[in-house]
Length: 112
Length: 115
Image 1 (tube, helix red, strand yellow):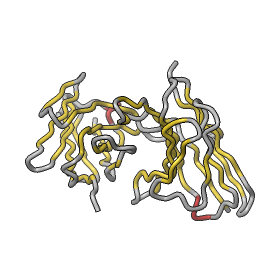
Image 2 (spheres, one colour):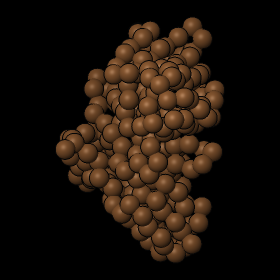
Image 3 (spheres, chains in turn blue, purple):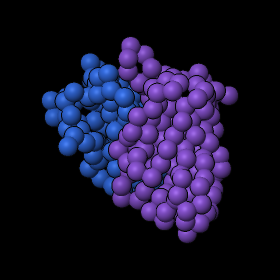
Image 4 (tube, chains in turn orange, green):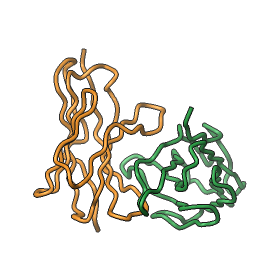
């Protein structure tokens, strides 16, 4: 079936370095993609989204890149901080879809 | 503050004892949904609702019921809980625009243990 997946289950990053979290999706009908951050003991929080008609979108210290040719999504976090330690999920919605489909998650550990 | 509120946060119960997990949102969202989160299995959708009195099964609906009598509330009911329903549960809500949902707002989660 169609799925959203992640390449790396755990990413260890030095504080101050940039982080890159990758995600592959297999459904070419997906129209809308979102990155979520889940800290321990909390619900997932929206970070940034991107529509399929865009290649790049920037937020505060975060950038999402979408490569539709290879069905790849990435989240870049600039100057990673200890507060960025969390599990990050990508999610997709098909056009006129009625649910988000989530990837398995990548744990980001920030080393001081 | 715009939020999704779940109660209780933690619950330990015995097999077969009916329970309800409540969910309420104050954002006037049409769409609400329940997910369970399990190690190695990620977030899986249980049920969702596109509007009042409209509910549909998600990917793992067995053993669960929901109702949507009011726009703001979407309770999750376990009529006869079993140990395999031990999990972390999340309620989420979303606006619907042009027939499509957008990003979810999640509640803080309910940790359920069935012994």
